[in-house]
Length: 469
Image 1 (cartoon, helix red, strand yellow):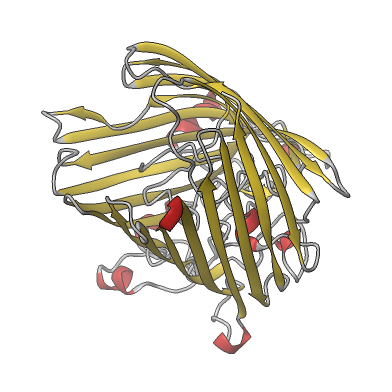
Image 2 (cartoon, helix red, strand yellow):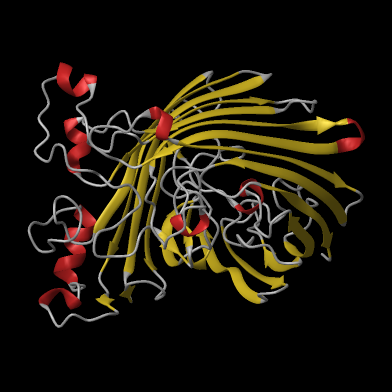
């Protein structure tokens, strides 16, 4: 639940589990998407792994086939192939997921492009984890790690780790650049304990590659040899790339330091979590410690009209522009104060994007998708966002989920702008899903956007999912 989750291909809500004797599965989704102004609503297109475009087509067709791991086997294999087609003014075909994996006990290795979210929190109702949210198409990777928490010390300690090498696309300023990605999370307490403490971190690096618009200079080609990889792996290095992150490390570094506390009993599980982002070692000066994602979720264990509630607050208004109270209290010195830690943007490289969509939280909206316009960067990335997600089951086994977000957008500047100048944005959606029988499911969504950052929109989606196997 806490690190990496393969979400349902059915937009917005999770589908009922497959039959117990079914490992192989094949399904077809057909959806019609529309809006009042030609732009899909925010909560229709966000967190859908890049399979729902910003500008709406007349329809979406998605075909998926694959095989799950057999839980009874110590050694087994899995695969998934999914294609998504957009039908309309700009028709397009996407290979939206494809991977092949092998497990041995609690460990696995896989290669391909697989749906993931990275971070600690409530994956079912989040507005998007800060670093890796499931908002863009999956990157192609080779991945090794645990499939979930591996229990040691009589189950009082759980360990979950991942290590991956991936490839970015060649659509932006840098061609043939790599992704380095790793994470380590610990769970203190047995899985059945009333209280669990979670601690961990994740680390992503864009590195290597060459400039598409060659300047004829030394930095037209970024280092990608073994020495560079060791620096990337360790997050070390000095003085090689003057236009990279604040410490001029090899590549651009991005990650979060996470912690969570869970309480559970027979009726409810309550999770309080915090994701503290970093793009350099300035996090240790505590000068950006008030930036981050804070969440509180309630998951009720019985089927009812309300089965889950998620509250999140995302704040990225500091970015190193002012000394935090905690930093001042502990007399921490920031060697780079007051320069800006420009979240999700990368100097000299592309931002944290893939196939034209943001990899991080969708609450920080890409300029290209905004009313203000622009390219593949995130100019208004100083945000203050409140989010509420609620889900449950109504009579007749109709599953529902509502999302509401209210956000203020600003440039990260010194001193801070007048709050009256903030761009204000409200977005909401309501999804309904009904499983008609074992093979056929229907869904409908209505959504609305109102504010200054993205276009005012009323729209939604109707869909049908049919399981062939």
